[in-house]
Every structure is written in structure tokens, then in C-alpha cells.
Length: 352
Image 1 (tube, rainbow, N blue to C red):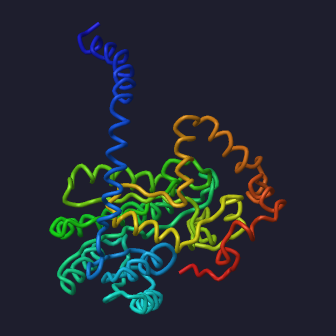
Image 2: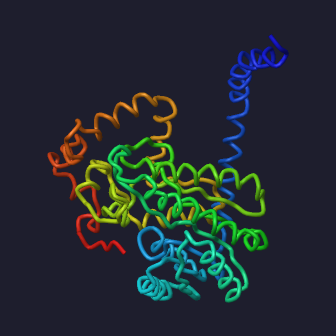
Image 3: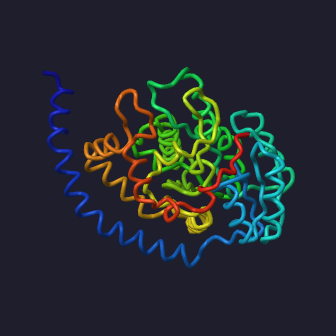
């Protein structure tokens, strides 16, 4: 047995004991300090009046309402997405709500040249950038073994992960100058093993870990607020996703299978919580807040979580997904009208 093996044996025995007693000593004063700083940051929250905010995926859902929330605080907005007509509508509403200015820049975040152009035009027009909101995203709902061509789902990683990386890479020098902040729309799916959402779950986990690493690399010059929403009113919870063929479609029955009896938070309240938390300089926000408890279940009882997901969402071979227990319980309870916002009950969702 070599010296390195002895070192590992020693650490295998001592590290858990050392960690346990260290946490007993460190956690109480650490959380007391965090509580104190939270109060201080609440009192001295960042004033967004006149500051410049770039939002990707700003044409609908959480991105749209983040624009309105920043607008109500007097910020200058740069709205980025592919749907130009919808962006102009959001920009007009934002101006009416108090935005000092709102600029529309058609952007496909999977194209790094589009990201460079969006940041360049922002700096050329406003001369600064204070908040970058990486919000653009897409999901899929299908089992891996049902997928026609797995390469069709690179789109999810390209938009969710690489789109955020591209935009951050382009914006970082200017955010460092302004000592700005990056708001990252990850998801509770980054820790939940929800079936039929494997590609989406992986992309959001990649985002979370990438930006945790950026905290270290950027240091105090650029703040990062990592957002992990649960089910929130958006085009995704309206049933817009990639099907097993990699085609974007609206399928509300499949949405019902996935969401089931989970109460869906309204977009407005989610946007308010995100901007409020970001302006306080906080590191994390989960909306609705109770959804954070699912992380503890996943950490301490992973086998139980896996069993529940399997029972609720996986059907017998040959059965359609609509036969999942999650869908049957939702239909039998008649609770959809109570738990889902009105927008989720309409079919008015476009797939472009």
C-alpha cells in the first residue's frame, strides 16, 4: 500500500468527522451574519433608475414580465429575442410602465455573432450595462427511448446553456466596469429528476454549475443571482415544447401530465421576486419559495424521489403518457381551474 492510499484512508475516516463538527461551529454565526447582511441589503437595495438592463427571451413569459418589473423601477431596457413584433409590444408597454428607454434588438442567442451585436449595440447606445438577464429557454417532453433522433435535442443545450454562456462572455467586460450583476434563469429542474424532461434538466444543471464557477472567476466585480423557479406561468407551462421528433409544438395534455397538481405561480409575482432579490444582491432565489424544499428531499431521500416520479409519471409499456397517474389524479380532482392561471387554460400559444 502506497503513501497516497494511506492518505486517502486517513481522509476517508477523518473528513466526515471534521466536517460535521466544523459545521456545528460555523453554521450558527455564519447564518446570523447572512441574516444581518440580508437586512442591510434590503435597506440599501440597488436603485435601478437610469441603469441599463439587457434581457434575453424578453418577448414572453418571465422575460417579458422581468422587463415590466425593471421598467417600474425606472431602468433602461434592452430587449432581446427572435420575435421582433412581440418585442416592440413589450417595449411599448415597458415605456408606459416607467422605463426611461426600451431598445429592441432581434437576437438568436445560439448565434454568438448575434450576442456580440446585442452587447455592442447596447454599449454604443447607452454607454454601459448594469444587469444581464439570461432568460431565453426551451424545453422538451419525451422519454429518451421514444426520441427519433437524439441529435435534434442539441437545440435545448444550445439555447439554454450556450446562449447564456455566449451572452455572458460578451457582456462580462462591461459588467465588470459597472460592477454589475448577472441574473441567471436556471430551474428547480436542475436538481429534480423529472422524467420526459431529461435534456432540459441537464441544460439547467449545466447553467447552475457554470455560473457557480463564474462567481469564483468574476469575484466581487460581478454579482450573480441564480434563479431556480418551480412551475411558473409561461409558454412552457402553457404546453410549448419539443416533441419526440424535435419539433416545437403546443400540447397541453402532455403539459398536464408533467405539471399535474403542482400549483403554478403567476409570472408577475415571479418577476417581482427575481428583481427584488437581484437588487438586494442576493445569490439565490426560488419562486415559489416553497419549491426549494424539493432540493432537501432530493438530497436526503433521493430513492424516495425517484420512486415517486416513477409511480406518478411513468406508464406501462405501450400505454400513452396521458395514462400516467399524474394526469389521472389531475383529471379526477378537477383542480386544474384552481391550480393553473387562466393563461394556461387557453390554447392561444404560437410555436414560432
